[in-house]
Image (cartoon, rainbow, N blue to C red; front, side, top):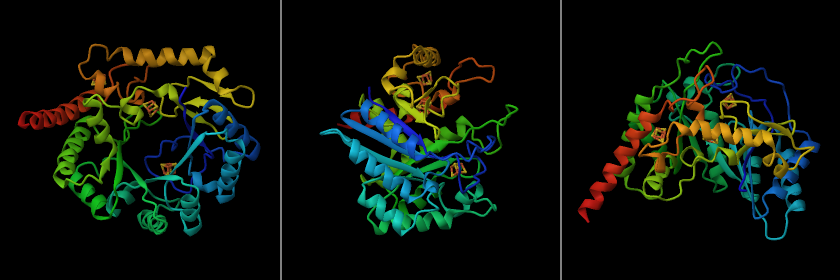
Length: 357
Ligand code: SF4
Ligand code: SF4
Ligand code: SF4
């Protein structure tokens, strides 16, 4: 089975973003220790003989220090089976990147994903440090260090209430500042009482943003620019394989490794479906377990509502995070209509090209 493990090396972060997924959780100040690190790497590598993926995540994954990743690379080399490929990626807030980190990422071929919500006036609305200060300048400094090592980071931009109404400004900012790979994630969160948080966006504005972005992307006509959500939607409509889990219905392949060495389901999956200790069980044993079968059943239940939808072949049902009512029952994905609108917009465009040739 192909695994895409997200390794939570720590729950600690140096920032305090207003919309942070963990904002209502108590930070345990946990960091993955050497013993857990070794077992987690071992388990992933024995489960993925041809190609082992490691996506390093947090909290903020750089907070554990460069030494930690030097151990990672040494362990991977030590445990690597003949012909086994290893791919490391890291998703960071970018504020701790300096010359040494950039050099390390270059030397060890790490793919770097960085969170940036557009120009400073949008990014700094929510992406702030512990003192409430905006972090845009520090992130751009991190980008500069990366570029000196010829690393072009992939950008993950959160669409929130403060930036979603201006796709033109955001697109121009990214393109004019030399960014070439970006992806957009809608922000939709509830507080512990179940109320929608004010920084959340509605599905309607999300659809408006994405369809306008598609038109801007086409008008730019630059094949070097990759907008992951849109490329995935185009690929899916054309019957090709998209890369993102949100179009592929592959939640069961996306697992989380917690700092204390447990295999859990993707952190966006809205039910606590599985938590098994890697110290005691191999990945295969966990996947063969009853708890895992129950989890697969939950995924199936989440997807049932999409049966018969004409867009299912392209949409894949979207992320289940948006399909759970507070009462615990699955319902139609909150972004369903928005996704249909984006698919229709793209499909109309593809059809109009096909009609001209
Ligand atoms: S950088 Fe990520 S983990 Fe840290 S506060 Fe911001 S959203 Fe949360
Ligand atoms: S468009 Fe809506 S109903 Fe159709 S597959 Fe996607 S989420 Fe399901
Ligand atoms: S829960 Fe959402 S983010 Fe997680 S794997 Fe499934 S689609 Fe992807």
